Image (cartoon, rainbow, N blue to C red; front, top):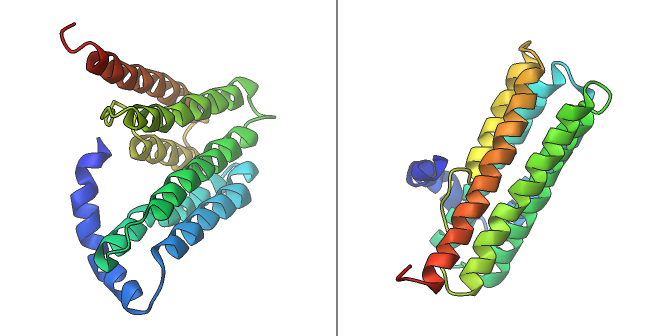
Length: 202
């Protein structure tokens, strides 16, 4: 869903990307700084609950939107490398774990089923990029699905911010459940891409 907005976001990042490239900043440095910012913000704000959920969502969003900045910088500088792609993908998993893990921790003593739902959403969500990577290693394009990473992060941060502003915490419970189910369906969709590639006449 949000993948369709990628060209617009990249256009917005052109200016800042050129600025950083001209000053010799490495795209990998931006990747690492963005991930550290996400992890630190999630762990500092989300476990405290209440209004901190809102401020945590704001802080995490600030660092998450830099996710496209490093890629734009790499293309502008002609420095798209395997190391950069590996680092970007790997650190995305670290950021996801921090966001969903910290939110789950916040509800451990409030409503354990909500905390469990958050961990399930994290678990299924982590399989989504693995399914794509494994498919691509087999020569199959398995992109897409109803719950790509951008969609999952956007929805959970919106829910966290809403709860932080006073909406019932059940909003986050429902969001976790929906994201867990959507991630499961996305894994099935990507699996079917491999099945169809294996049996094109089926």
